[in-house]
Length: 70
Image 1: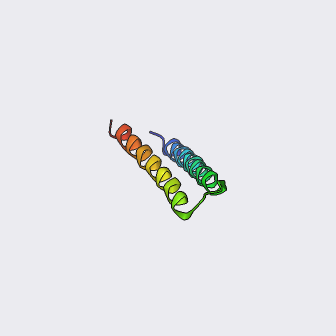
Image 2: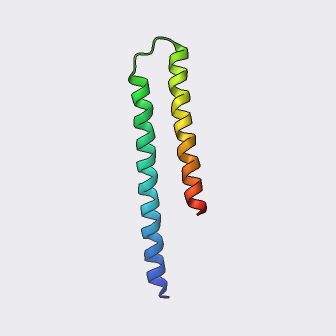
Image 3: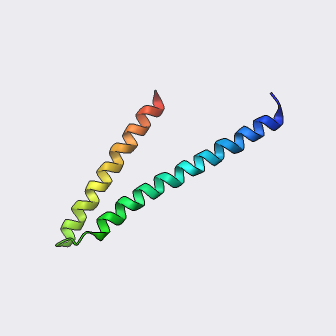
């Protein structure tokens, strides 16, 4: 293969990965901001909301790992 083509493809893949990372971070940041906007009654209510978010993140991570292994 042509060395220039390989370098071009490498840059393209790196750019796409960086864009995907930005999208993922933005998504979870928005989810966290939604929780922070809620007027929680107590610290324990806020903790429960954060635990739900952490569980959603765990589930998503599990699904991503499973699909990557296939």
